[in-house]
Amino acid sequence: MTGDTTETAPATGYGSLFTTPEFTPLFLSSAAHVAAQTLAGLALGTHVYRETNSPLLSALSMFGPSLAQVLGATFLLSGADRLRPRATLAALSLAFATTTALVALPGLPLGAVFAVLLLQGLVAALGGGVRWGLLNEILPNGAYLTGRSLFNMMNGLMQIGGYATAGLLLTIVSPPQVLALAALLYVTSAAVTRAAHAERPPRTTGRATPAETWRTNAELWSARPRRLTYLGLWIPNGLVVGCESLFVSYEPGAAGTLFACAALGMLIGDVTVGRVLRPAVRRRAVTPLLLLLAAPYAVFAFHPPLPVTATAAALASIGFGASLAQQERLMELTPDQLSGHALGLHSSGMLALQGLSAAAAGSLAQLAGPARAMAVLAAISVAVTAALHLADNGRRIRH
Image (cartoon, rainbow, N blue to C red):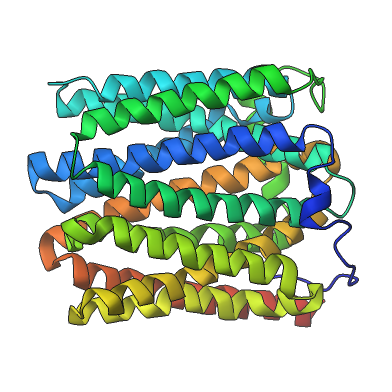
């Protein structure tokens, strides 16, 4: 799902990124944000499953807010390049802290919980565009893939630690107490952003309006190579996250272990793609990695022991490394002044597909059980990857 480009080496190594002004505070504030999301997600999913015994509601409580990314991408995303990054990121972290504290309130009706999560997902759509657009802006030319690889590694480490910590905490304290801790981490993220980032002007001029969001979305979607890249970033990834959304209902006592192993695999994939593979190899590896992302979930249908399922989850998540090569291709196809919007559209579309897949997975699990639902979503992911590969090869042959 990538085209041919001139092979170039990454401009910087991981260590030198931290000498780039503003990279370190963005890295630290993002780490606190991811840790908070991880703690909050498992705590809320566990709480809802304990209260309802419903795989669907548990999956939606963890990944349902991603559905609101569709609305955010439709109405808010033009702000990614038109708002001041420091103030916007700090405000968004505080919004996450407030909404997480709200869902931690004892006795809050389930409908109110999902309404708050909808609001959280809506504002998150803007956050992805602002954060990744700022990363692309502060790094030197050619360093975005290296920087994003390091961020993905950090995400993996935070998720491994976060899911393991949340799993342990949930055996000692209640889910609302874990949610309160997550809210404090969001406040920490906002404080680091506000204190350590310089005040930067917006990357482009004009008002952030729904009409401008629609116009830029249409421009980005108008080129077939970008469309195929977006679809490859969104659909296979989203379907596999639908499989992950069933970990709590598949094995409630071991969900933290499964999530941590999946995060470990993602970390391995990001290191391999970001630092080991040469650019030409990265491009050729996209389809094999996306197939690897889905195939191991077939074993869940046979209810093997935990070491087998944990290994399968880790092996599959190595395939998430494909997104680095796909994002690199997306930046090659996108004008610099639209980089924040383009990356925000990627992030929002990916998360929206994850939310839709979680809903589909939960619904299917209600009828056929979590194990069979995982196998079905994995098979669809493989079929979509194969179709996109054939479509991209056909495009390149015609040109």
